[in-house]
Length: 268
Image (cartoon, rainbow, N blue to C red; front, side, top):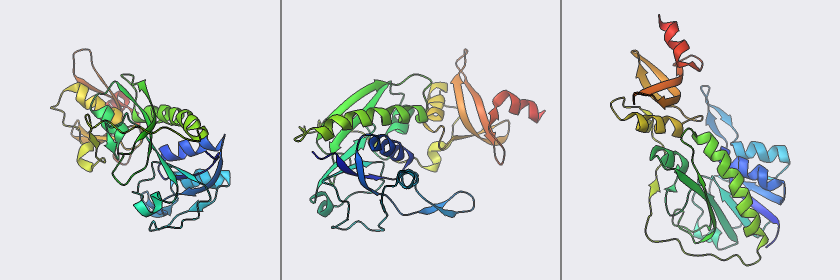
């Protein structure tokens, strides 16, 4: 298999893997989604993967619609957190390898790491599989697992997954005839995208479940709660010695992140 590859990526996880791949491979092009409004001002912003590609001098393609004949200039495309299904007509043109941060077939879909943490999984991993039209259902070329520590948040798990993904891809991309095995038919679960209601902490629920939700949404989204009669974003929390939910770091609406104890003192 040629060391010259294209990459399809949009989100920060994809940007991380792109940068790691660029250390050992010639990246012919980045396929990413169009710039989109972001932030309070809703100004157009480049996707994180595009920002990395431009810094590396990698050509960037941002088609509004995926159609055959994309000028990717490589026989293989690595797809990682691209955020769009690739139609069959494009899949037929070359080999598309998808990087998915879970142990497929568990947690197919948009938010595998977040859903794994919310479920309290103690193990996750990375799967490299052939991209097919069905979501994250392609045959597997490589897979490896790692343990999730009790206090790991999504940012830490994504970083470890990116490093593992780059290692797995080295072996797959160096193999001129990678072996693909079908995914098991049992154990399929789906990691639906994070919706606004998923962020709301129901303080009547068990503390462990609440802490796992906080971990899953930190540091990129944040869980929401009403504490002391005020709406805050909760970035860190723990299960206290008496089994209750203990916020550790919060951010009041319109304010900055701070230690929970400091925020409480400010209310007095």
